[in-house]
Length: 565
Ligand code: GLC
Picture 1 (cartoon, helix red, strand yellow):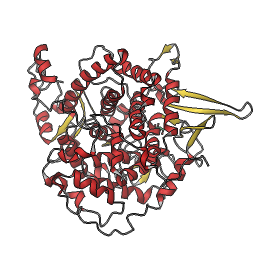
Picture 2 (cartoon, protein in one colour):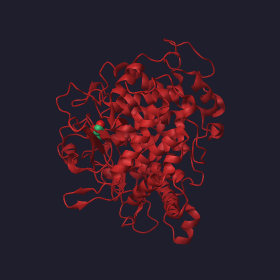
Picture 3 (cartoon, protein in one colour):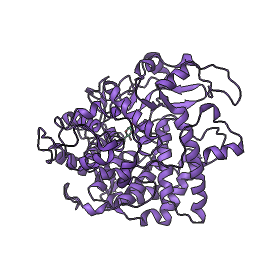
Picture 4 (tube, protein in one colour):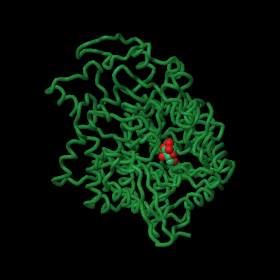
């Protein structure tokens, strides 16, 4: 078919690790912060008896990872309904569908199409290779020991980045990476041509801020997985990284270290009220900066960027951990905020008016648990839950270990709301009625509990699984995967599900959506062999100090050096 190895024929030696200080090092896992054992209960206790996966690898991993090695149900292998060492029957089907989605350029595989849905009359732009959609496909192939396509993809997108990008009479920043591209085959002339979209054709002309970040994250995953650092070290890739960084590290009128964005600039690529400082982008920004730090050469050009990254990471982690974090205590504090505080001693730094806190959040917030809220800017806090941002915050260690645990606690406590019958809600809750009209501009695709507005996206399963493994809570992932397994193949791998519980196939969902397929495979492979986690995870950087008291965060220059460095 395409010369690739079949699943199962994994080249085990292919993912040697690049030993950099930031990365997850399994040998260091027992030193992770000791957390109260009771936090680990609930989902984790439901257990191995009901769920069927290859537990052998996980067991050794978990005994290393869990605090004190004391996890109920983990010390003894238990019989499962099916032979746990046999792959689930839908895995082979998933691989076949994933391979069908491969796109070729001059005979070389260079990516995967967004959806291979022949039943749908409208192709729209689902016949393209989306940068963000390709990430789970790439991880699946890397985990299966097939890195060629990923290298081709990274180089081709780099080449597209080099294009002069214009929309009408406006020239876009040099470092912008495309949202997607497609290959035009001319059967007569026998030529292949690449055509990219930088936002000019996208609905609402939205430029993808996340593409460049995903590109950097994928380059590190490739390097980590193959042990081949020559690609990342090549002058072209070094330049590509620097160009992306130039876009997001430039100085302006900012008073925050977060990145100012237009609505629809990420996976949520239509108007959904995420303009400002969306968590989805801030978490990816943080992760991309950390990944870039491990790959940038300390040569004359790279050195300056390294210094800027280090400073930004310190400021960004402080800002996010302090102001985006919400738990019961924090919510109560905000509820009691005074307004009109002026001066550096203000507690209510962004002048958030307590009356603007939506009612739902008071019921939603459990005593145990917390999360990074959607957005923080002057007098505006978007309290919605965003799955991708929270999972990436865990993977990048933007979240402290305590915050990571609290996010997992929240997922358990609010399982019905955030997972329901199909993992995972992209946002929670949905916006409705008047608010929906104002926020989405009456978008018929984003009606309540559909698509980006409270819809459930199977692709997010891989991010959830990675976060679960990192926090030592694999049973949560198992439970979610089991739910997905019951439906995905039967429903022909929909793009998203609708409804409060995610029970219905999405109104306009494509079938055979590639990232739904790849996301499932990556989740399965990661659970089977948790060492894959290192590709998409970064360990905590001890230099980034934990929280300091809110009222002390404004500092004059000499104090600030002491506090942040
Ligand atoms: C939709 C999604 C976007 C995705 C694209 C291709 O536009 O909102 O996140 O990248 O489809 O699947």
